[in-house]
Image 1 (cartoon, rainbow, N blue to C red):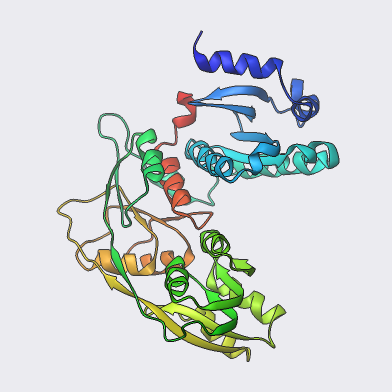
Image 2: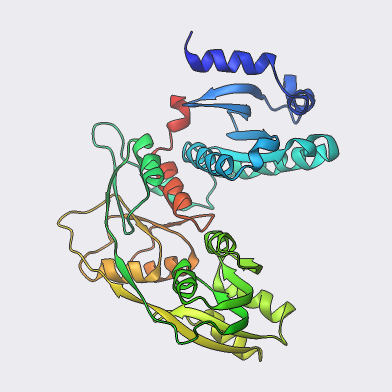
Length: 357
């Protein structure tokens, strides 16, 4: 008996009260006639509950999951499982007792979404054929990856090449230690530059969870967060129209946010705190996939290369808009993170992974 089987059997015997209560809802096809398994082994993990057919995993978290180190482990675990094609639903144990219908509704919603993944909503799934077998796909990342991010690709068997398509130069801020009431950040680079200057900021408005995380880790108060600049501008217009803002940005910043605010009479000033330099490099080969994380990265790559033979994976709609100037073979991450871009590539090039489990 292998170690994972031993762990799974032990967890079956020692399930928590929350797991036992949720299992009463899910066992023997009681919910929506869906077959769930509990404490089931998937690759190197044992998951709390899983429906293989609809590729849904449910994890119940106790108090120790509030620990910062454990939260990072959970995040990487979820990314690995998503790379295998699964949707991971996480709930605190107390939700099982306080609002079990919330969990069941989320499961029902995920079932509907996952069953529709093969529909025409994503024509790439139907029209492009991922390479498998003796010639595994190779992708190019236009950003150097962390060790954990590289492991995601290595675990799927996808070959990869990485380089930094852009270089960032942080500028000395003329603001110094003055007090800023409302600051807008649309990138981590702007945050890093401002943090070096020691500027005091009362309220931060930002784009992206990673930008928010960096601000909060450095003691900054984040008032609003959105997934893209346009959405953040709309929030500000609706809720903070009488406030004034300072937009910390790069020299190649996009126009959407400042234009929307100015058109709606929101007072905004700008401070360029970093410069983006294109780091173009010619590759004497084509790639099955290319990962892009910014419009500047796209501009850098196409100076010396073409995209006509590659599936392109983008971190968001803004980056995708730049890619559409050169190809329509695009898949956009459903979360604006590096990990999710990798997950989309893994799902695309390894669509039969779940059958190998």
